[in-house]
Image (cartoon, rainbow, N blue to C red; front, side, top):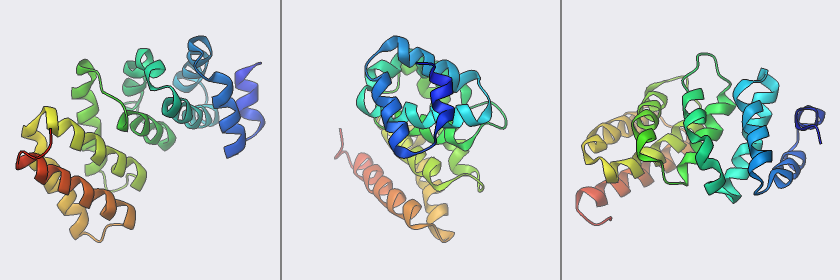
Length: 179
C-alpha cells in the first residue's frame, strides 16, 4: 500500500481507523506514518496525526522511538492544530521519558497560556501537567493558577470539567494523598 495516497484518498473516522489498523503494531509501518506526519504537506500531516493518535491508543510502546521528533514538531511555527492536539493526546496516557519532560512541560504551559489555543489541546495539557506535577511538585502552584484563571474567564464545559478534575488531583497531591 502507498500510505500517502491512501491517507489522501478519504478523510473519515472509518478510513482513519482502518489505516491505524493497517499500521497496527508494525514498527516499519509506523515509521512510514511518522515520516509523513513530520515532513509532508499540511493535509497529509493533519490526517497522519489523527491516525497516529489511534495507533498510540492501542500501541503506546510503539510510539516511544518517535516521541522526541513528535515533541520537537510541536515547536514549529504554523503547525496544524491537529499536530498539537494529537501529540498531547498521545502523551496524555503514556509515561513521558525523562529527557522529554522539560520540553513537554514547556509546551503544555504555553498551550494553557495561549488564549487562542483549542479546548482539546488545553485539556490534554492540563492532564499532562497534572501528571508531571507528581514528579515536579514545584510546578503545582503555576498549574493551579492557570486553571483557576481559565475557570474565572467563563471556561467551556470541556475546560471546566478537565480543570476541576486536575485541580482536585493537585489538591490531593499537595495533601499527600496521591502517589
